[in-house]
Length: 281
Picture 1 (tube, rainbow, N blue to C red):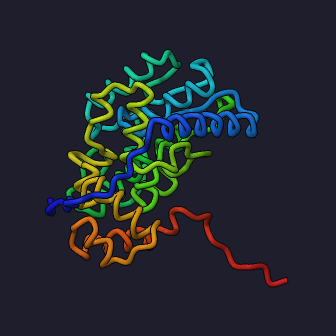
Picture 2: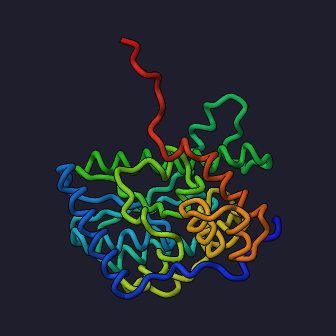
């Protein structure tokens, strides 16, 4: 793994208690509006045992009540069993209905009929590994929408502002949802709001991982920790500072700032509707 960049003086993006409470009310009202506008009966939330999905399901229960939230735990062969246990524990603590639906067999069925793919084996090649990881994520989206159709629900996403900004999600995978309630929050703010709502500290402080393949971590994939990423996004991508000024303020190499800008620009297609040509007539 490459060296991880860590800002010497990261930007303080923490929210006050009043701001946290404002976001709590803002997001729960948003969820109520989304469900009502869709004429839906329930909110479907994929549970990974991580901070993003846990905060999202806490907010959904607060907004709609436990009887109108349904959880899906969708493990694959590479998921940490402890994370899956945490996901089930969160559902049980909140009193929501949930099911465990493994995605491995579905992903293997796709690989079994695809020329050249080897079902059942973890790929050694980086491109194949990424393809399989994204297949697993897209399988979860298919399962989520199947559940939503059966239960007259909407699929509630768990993406945050930091990961969306750099494209750290699978297009038509975990990005395939009906709404993203925690989209305004940087990763550090997600942890803050989760703590504010009473999410167990072990989950609040758990290292983040998309778990698309074995031993994957967010920090390892991004090449920097979240305080550094959040700072660069707030100052350079979402803020007014230049690359050089951002690097000076938080004391990181300019290359780290340029990398985040490149990730943001290169992932624009993930955050937009599929393009088409303008009508001629």
